[in-house]
Image 1 (spheres, rainbow, N blue to C red):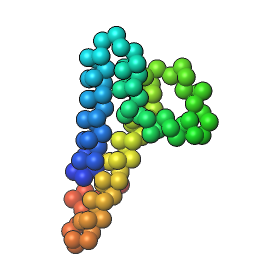
Image 2 (cartoon, helix red, strand yellow; image 1 turned 60 degrees about the horizontal axis):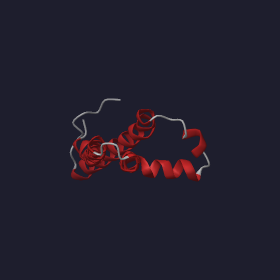
Image 3 (cartoon, rainbow, N blue to C red; image 1 turned 45 degrees about the vertical axis):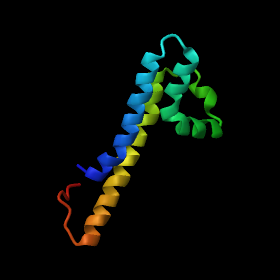
Image 4 (cartoon, helix red, strand yellow; image 1 turned 90 degrees about the vertical axis):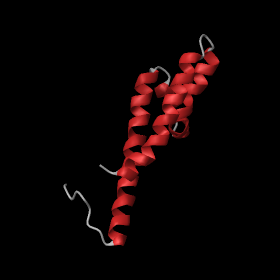
Length: 101
């Protein structure tokens, strides 16, 4: 397990939990719910819109959208952290703790 990878994932996870928590407290305010549900995946949605694929997401449920967009971000953040950690270990002259495939 990469500590730096987990450290990079933690703020994003906290942000998602905070936004979903705010949605649960918003009651019947649909506009607030929509805004706070979109915040964690706004960057990904902007890329999809720029690629002209926005209509493909119109009927996508929020849990599906989160699974489609959040999971790859966690994988990317963890991978970046793991690679940075491995690079730092090499610079220090330390061997990686785990050298599995």
